[in-house]
Image (cartoon, rainbow, N blue to C red):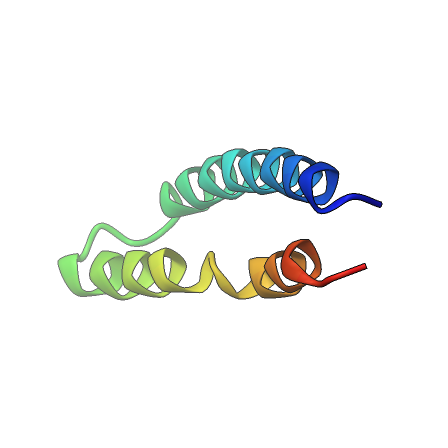
Length: 65
């Protein structure tokens, strides 16, 4: 598979994942208690962890061959 096609497929997959992740984070965020500390902790964790599942995809996109 050409590197150009891999990057295109990866870009589409990243956009789809992020759209689903943001929707899920917002829906779950509605169920967090109204206390500021709970919301801060939830959104800090959710806002940081979105990149972890993308590491293998980005690695695949940049691999030769």
